[in-house]
Image (tube, rainbow, N blue to C red; front, side, top):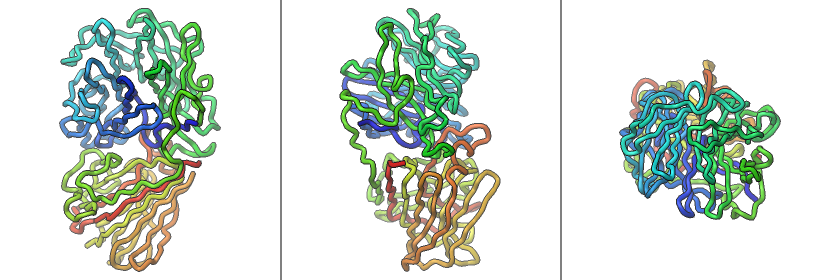
Amino acid sequence: MIRNPILPGFYPDPSVCRVGCDYYLVTSTFEYFPGVPIFHSTDLVNWTQIGHCLTRLTQLSLDRTPPSSGIYAPTLRYHDGTFYMITTNVDRGGNFFITATDPAGPWSDPIWIDSEMIDPSLLFDDDGTVYYTRRTGDGIVQAEINIETGDLLTDLRLLVHRFIAPDMEGPHLYKINGLYYLMAAEGGTRYGHAEVIGRSESPWGPFEPCPFNPIVTHRDQGHGRIRDVGHGELVEDHNGNWWFFCLGTRHAFHASAGILGRETFLAPVTWTDDGWPVIGENGTIPETFETPLLPDQTRPADGVWRDEFNTLSLDLSWNFLRAPQPAHWSLRARPDHLRLMGSDQPLSIADSPTFIGRRQQHFNMEAACLLDFDPTAGREEAGLTVYVNHAHHYDLMITRRDDQRCVVLRKTVGDMADEQVSGPIAPGPVELTIASEPGLYRFAARDADGMRHNLGSGLTRLIAPEVAHDHYCWTGAFIALFASGNGQACRAPADVTWFEYRYSEEM
């Protein structure tokens, strides 16, 4: 039994390539650093993160990148001993690719191509020609590319405006059984999202549209738990079976919001006698499916992830906002602790505060940490946040009010803010806890004397991507450790002894 999503949490725009019996997958990261996580699998079901493609500031500039900007829609390809990851840095240079001989890294510095639009992809053809395909404002365009230099060898040429709907994006060109298949998403990456496909005897078209386009959509399933599916990738496994990876959102009930963001889903593919792909359950992505072609999933339905910070490098699950600052954190300053030094930047501005976070991957979860922090001034604060963007987050923190050390729950929703303050707390470390269920977060703290402080609750939908935007939001919720001096650098360190994430996959 295979259950979706195959990668839970904010992992959108999946791209997958096969090398022998090994499979590699990358996803978008937008304003988070490092950029573009890369996963490995030998069975397409069980995935292990092996690194990130963009790990250096020379590769990835995100300084003051707006929310949901930054790194869009990567495509991963392999050719003649080299991996190629091509993507877009929307506000810092446009389309580029990097290369590696080991997918775990290190990856090269960027080779820049052009700066117009997004969603670039590559096809290495049998005759040595490499095709560069991407979105433009009028559809999908393509050119031949010099894969050593990034120079375009031909003019960009329009392949197709649309197959059935506007807003064509996320193109991938494949060569299958001597024909060229152009697959892309249409209808926008929300409620009208769909995947379409066409084919031609030439990589330049004209492309005959599939007679039953869209080949994937949930746009007529507004009550379903899985919505917004599209932006997919076709993959042939080493046994000759075909599979489809795509993004989608999960919803615990009809009116719930997709707080986890856009996740990665998997579906089986069969082919009609006349050569068109049939995906999932007649073009829909199942919550679960059975197949003898894949092994069991090893991911437990319930579990715990714990970090005791007893290594000299951060786990690959952790991420920074935009440009990481070495002065903001240390695993060496106090053995077996993560030390945070709060900068002058608060969480409420779109910049690079002291912030180390991991994705929320489950509706039912509990995140907790043990935090040793004695703020020296009322503006100093440190704690846990559930964060979607700078204008939509709930913060549970140690700070001072009326010169007394206390725990505060601050809820920021757009231009509205509210605080709930505990009574004085005992000296010493404090355990902070954020628990979630579909529709609601709950916040509590336990001080060194064992006194429990319940700080209240917050609706998940008020900070979810559907709400947390000016005109779009493509990220999902992060649970993060943070510290801030709110206008000046903190003088007091915030030392985290451990962090724990408990979860249940039951909706």
